[in-house]
Length: 161
Image 1 (cartoon, helix red, strand yellow):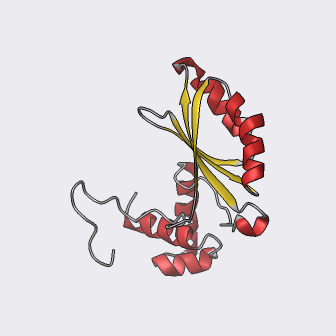
Image 2: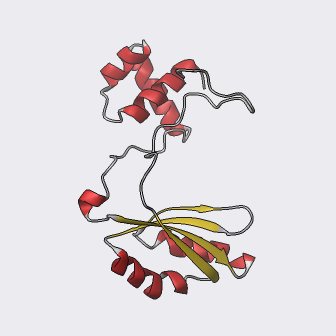
Image 3: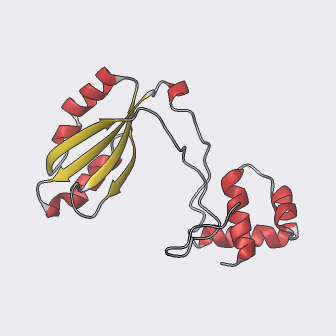
């Protein structure tokens, strides 16, 4: 991974539909060399896919909840993970160190829809000891591209970076 690969990744994160020709111009490579690098990044699993950023509320998913889940037993993790993956309203889930065990992001149309999902599905997930729901009031920072470089421990990023 060199500076050119990082530029390619930054450009693709900012504009996933950029043409290969425009991307090559942006990173100052020939189209064939740029294409080869993009394919290498895809093959290495660094680029995991391409998708559109969609306004959830415009599609009727105007209610977002963060659910903190604590499991009753450690051996339920695999089964719990598989069950989460089968619920379309769960758009993101992370396993955490310590307690709670999971942070789960859920989208629904409204509070009654979430209540129904909670009562009919979420509380019945395998191994669940407790769920704690927090309603999202506002998205303060929308999902955004990763920075080009990780900042060094204890060193703030340079101004304008």
